[in-house]
Image 1 (cartoon, rainbow, N blue to C red):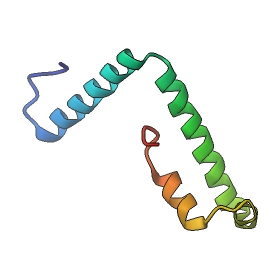
Image 2 (spheres, helix red, strand yellow; image 1 turned 120 degrees about the vertical axis):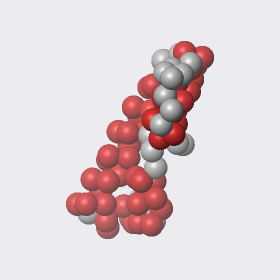
Image 3 (cartoon, rainbow, N blue to C red; image 1 turned 30 degrees about the horizontal axis):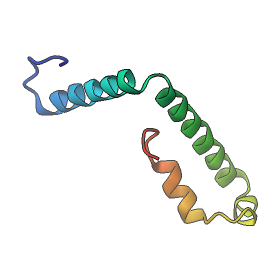
Length: 78
């Protein structure tokens, strides 16, 4: 466990979250990192479409509200 001496609740929560992510990576290997990188790339591209040409997004069959929701998700969420 990381930093068991932390008494500050937000710092403790952050340390626990980092520990959980590192444990997850060690259990699942590098595939998880590749998945996260791909989500980041796809969400950036989606954001670029929202910023430059929403018509293309709608023509491709995507709802703008859904796109905004997808972009706002953290990279570790599917």
